[in-house]
Image (cartoon, rainbow, N blue to C red; front, top):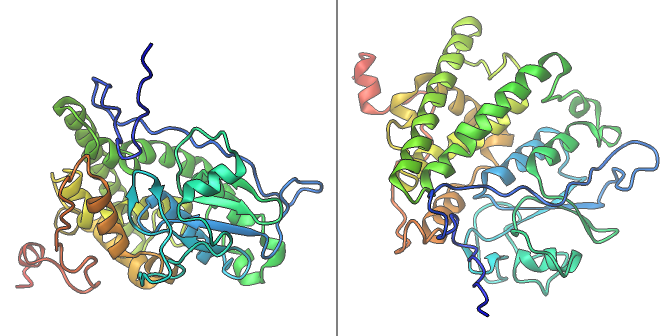
Length: 345
């Protein structure tokens, strides 16, 4: 009797899968922080700790939302090192100086070198992937949740009783827009957020072309939507108008990584954002340059080095491209081709 070797963490597509398609596994820990009386995980200042990676778009959602809602003094966080190896995400060592706030050794468990140890401390029989983000309860030493879409919604209002009025009023999921946001989330997640991964991790030509075609068709749809919004409400319009919503948060984390990483590393090179999607480009720079919660949580060194030096199934020599330069263009600058087309050269 032979025992099949376990799939390596760095094999994003199962080598035995003949379709060559990337299939994302569901998150495992799905509990909820709630203001309801008797809740297992009630909102408390200093009780919860967030583990993230600046490189990971899903974790990035939670950092943006934490800052938008003014939760910095209520929920602490640690950012892992950008490198993911055979043992998954690791923590920075004391002698490493990485950009970004709190990219340090685990302050709660100094003996832990890897995030997987946190998972095993909660469940020694854990069999899933060791993903970020992780929302951890310091009081009960339990993982509350590791699904980003649920963590950000907990952050929207479950801690409002602990917040000053200016942050209570921040509502990325307003009731009047919920049906539109949910519908947008559905296809944006499948075709764009996860679509770049389905393109980049594909191991057959057919799987790649199917995913990348859908991706760019969806980017064209987003471009048309944002162009209409900007024509109606001005160039500073967000996805659904004058205020930031969940749609902006969830889309931004992919678009911010698109030109620096996904164009070359994931072969998403039909067009780039800065020269091929003017409305998306305006929207991206509005969020990055005008809203600190987006700019201050975007760490391009983590982003570029993680993808290019961790994903050896794609890039075996770990060479990180220099460009594009800069990572995000200033609001008043365009690449030469766009400037020429607009008669500005």
